[in-house]
Image (tube, rainbow, N blue to C red):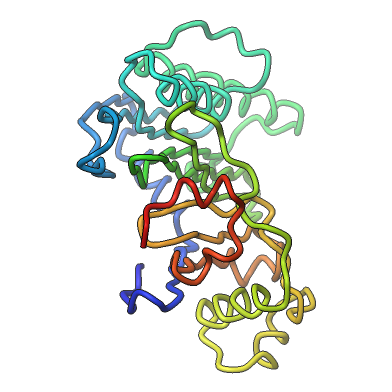
Length: 287
């Protein structure tokens, strides 16, 4: 759920804790037959003066067998030979497949199908190692991955990744959500775009966390967080560029317990600019 605020305010979004339920629902919709679909991506609009349009097509695949269910969605770049298309393709491949995967095809339909095949096979082997021969449909393992392009400009392209995995026996699943920004001219994957923190940046991070948790004071925030909020850490995954500013997305346990979620918020460029690295400043549009 996105909250509309003035340009100089930090914005935040509440991340549904039931995303795994959505994944399961989508998997159940394909109870017997795997389903593959393709459509033109509409997740981002290129800047009018961009050096050639970065175009993606959306592919999704859902599969289910006796071991569990699997779902994958990705915005896949058109293969035009550009550095950014090559970089994003490599990123998608490395995200979906473990090192050493023998998959040679760059066909996105083959990639999505093979991801589910390998995932379900791994589920079966894990269940066998656990001595579990049968799982009830209501408690079956499930896994899903989404790779969505959320932003592009003349200088940068950003993807967001959501991954969820649930095994069985009623334990809560594991999930991660993060973003990755690429430099468009050469496809470089940007790492940390924030310079070394100082007290004034700490204040911005506390403001974002207070807004996310809907509390008014640092005292209230400290009762929720498991870290010293006088010097909030940066997220495990580096912040990334979006259309409205730099998004900070904390992973589970970065700053709070599992039940309190994975806080995220976006700091407008006008406020975060002094803390950006030189490379990151070069990728942001004048604001």
